[in-house]
Amino acid sequence: MSEAKDKTLWELKRIKNIFFCINFLWSILFRFCVSCFLVYIIFAYFDKLNFFIFLLIILIILYYLFGIFLSINIKTIQITTNNFILQKYIGSDMVLPLGTFYMCEEDEIIKISFDTIIAIRPLTIQSILPKYFFIDFSNTNIQEIYEIIKPCIKNSLIQMNENDYNCFKNNSKDGLPNNYINFCEIDILRKEKNNG
Image (cartoon, rainbow, N blue to C red):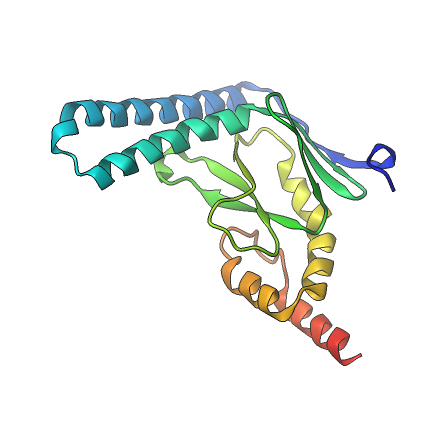
């Protein structure tokens, strides 16, 4: 089925109210203040900083600013019959076939911001960096995605080779919603597939 004929199963909806505005402003302001503070540290103590500490501070600043950009740059997210589509204001849209990725929630580096990061990670390749991440400002229906993509993830895990499956099973439990993937059930289905 072509991309144009794909039926839209789910679309991101944004809820705009006072709580969203407060949460959004808090997140942006917090990230901006942390970045300014780190820039101040660089300028105030530049001659005393070790190169690795300097590099770490720069990376944290870039992470915070990049997180803001990635979150604001999301135009919409759709799930169609075959694909996950993330449309952006700037840059090319991201289209991923269902079953090739999973989504998880990760805590912010500095937990004082109370932000939840939604990360989109490849299913078969264990990488440190996700394919995309954005801040969940708690104003969307993003939580509905988990149940929609769950059957596709389950089918992919059943078909996956043993090494990739074990790697995923051992490394992906953090950040997944409770009881999201029943690895005991998948283990049984994998054994049945291999025996039958």
